[in-house]
Image (cartoon, rainbow, N blue to C red; front, side):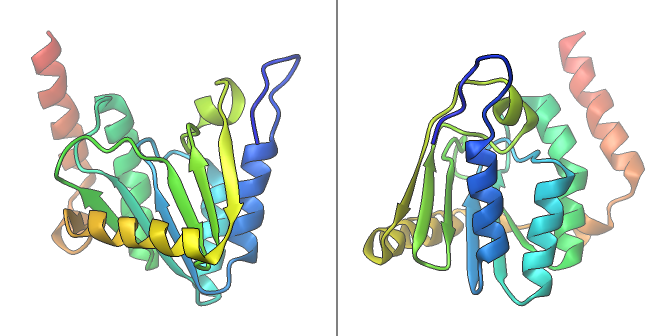
Length: 175
């Protein structure tokens, strides 16, 4: 699958992700550094969770793009409140882009789950339907979870003002 920059974006990667999420029956494990996929994808994840699919997201604790981290914060907290398991990888900068569906389908490549990758960037992914490969990818995901902290509890109960405080502190470092 590839996004080609021609007259308009090719939506093959987006369609493949959405189809995999919508068809998932048992599990969805997504690792992505810039998780800002938009309402259609978010709705599909919530619907998967609502039909009993275990949905786990692994994102970086500290992004290399602070504005993306700020944008992701509310979105991830909303997903966690919905019951989706969201984990923040703490060991280092996370840059992997993988997804495993039902322990049989793996999507891996350069594609971020954000608007830039959906619409503008030239990206390439592979979709591999193989239970052994998916088992290997799932084991890697599980290892990464050991270096992650689940988001929830106190983090979910933070007031909206704390996000503003975080932004102000970040901006002070740039002024």
